[in-house]
Length: 477
Image (cartoon, rainbow, N blue to C red; front, side, top):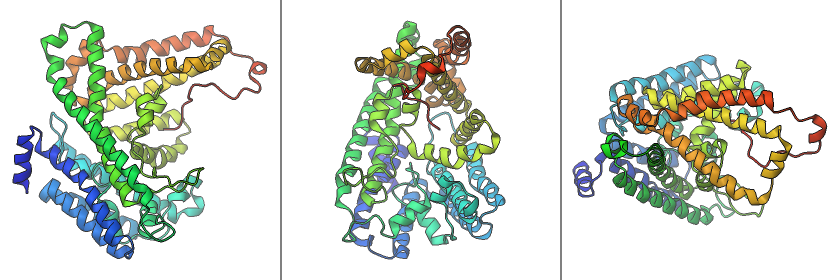
């Protein structure tokens, strides 16, 4: 099989590991159909065996003998949740057994390019199992848990078979989406079936829509990879001889085209999750079935969001939800929202790997979010400006301006993430005169302090009865 995949990869001029990953996430569709046809009414045990068989087979196809990393982690997840559930030691043990394991793997597996190795699906399994341990902790401390923690808390100990099925579920084990054991149990127990206890037919078209969207993004990405062959282009004389504006513009275009690779993977695998039925999320206000329970990409928000909150919240939604519920909200003890946000972002940085660029990207993201909050604080002090921005005819201009700012700002930062090694991204970042760092780490913080002293605070009487600004306010991470 590997020889056939290698020959096919050579024929279409792509990397073999990338082709294996693509075939793996595409296999989610026939597997979902098989589950709908033969297993959806079977007992949880039978379904678990099917999920494990399918998932392990896909792991072997992608990782070969390196599957032992995931098998070992599944065993650790069982031991932790069954022998020390509900204890602080279980959270510590989970991070040592899963995150520690992955970081050791990164040390030996990372290279100068985007790596598709056993660590690629394993990083998904890491936060899934860490989230599982935390949910079991919440379930065993149910009375002391917060309302949001009670929703996903697990009060009974999961079996080894259930944990393995949860970890190896075919429509979520390689590139996401993330979901909780609570949702997985509801799915397996038939709670998402229709009134006739059949798989809901209403999920077929949303699944097809995500698949088509994913294929479209994949085609655009492949075309972009040929059009802008990074990183070579960003070190070429042709690029360096361009004006500053065009250098930054090409970086911004490359950022969008590169991100479509991730968008494609998220959409395709989400489509398989919808087809399987696990994405069912109740009814909308019109009584129609909703299929956004495992959403990983909000397409319109990603394409048209006009501030950092909307854009950052539009992609990798499952991981962001894990970060919000299992990291950020559990740092209330810090007494500092900004401190909790910084710690959460650093956690996500190290989860990606050791490269300096990962940490710079997340620090930059936080600086952008702070600058956004500061902008909104200034706007609140200027009623005339707020009234002007509230005019309906200004909305298209806000979108266009916001998109330009988002694309150029995020494109600059993405150099440190997309080009990975400092030796590779240093030249392109330097060619842009470190513009993003200067703007968000130096210029805007200073400007904000000046404006806060110059612009008078609006009197309370002037704002009574107002419902807020038309511009989106910052949400939690």
